[in-house]
Image 1 (cartoon, rainbow, N blue to C red):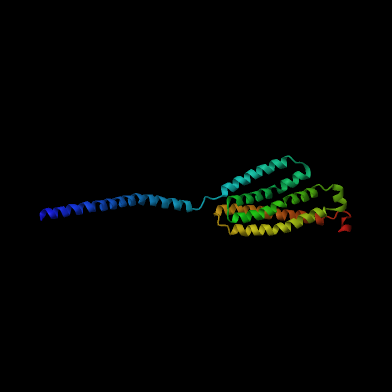
Image 2 (image 1 turned 90 degrees about the horizontal axis):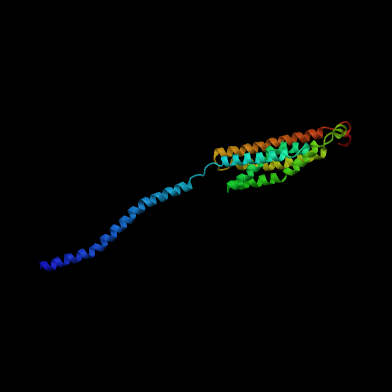
Length: 217
C-alpha cells in the first residue's frame, strides 16, 4: 500500500514539474517585458511631445535672405537699386513665410500659399516703383508724377491686402508656439508697413500734377 502511494506521489510530481516551469518562464518574460514596456511607453511619450520652436529656423532664413537680397541690390544702380533696396524688407518677410510652409506641414502650407501669390507680384511692384524713380526731372516738373506707375502700385496694394489679411488670420490660429507665432506676425507687420509705403508713394505721384499735368487728369 505504501509503495503504491509513493508511486502515485512521484507520478504527480513528475506531471506538475513542466507546469511550474512554464509558469516560471512566463513570469520571467513578464518581468523582462515590464521594464521593456515601460521604456517603450516613455519612447512613445517622447515621440508625441511637441517639436521645438521653429523660430530659430525662421531667423536663419530671414538672415540668409536679407544677406542675399542686399548683395543683389549692391550689384544694381540708379532707380533699380532704389526700388530693390526699398522692397528688400518685404521680400525677406515673404521668404520667411514661404519657408514656414516647408517647415510646418499643417497650416503653414496655407500661409505659404498666400505668400506665394504675393511673391508672384513682387516683380510688378519693383518695376512700377523703378519707373517712378526713373521719371526724368523735366517730365516731373511739367507733367507731374507717373500716373501709370502709381495706378499699378495701387492695384497691387489692393490685391495683396486680401492676401495679407488671410495670412494674418492663419498665423493667429496657428498651433505653433508663441515664439514662432511672434516671428510670423513680425513678417506680417513688415508686409503691412510696405503696403502703407507703396500707397503713399502712389498717392504722392497722383497728386503731383506738375506745371501743366492737371490738363490730362
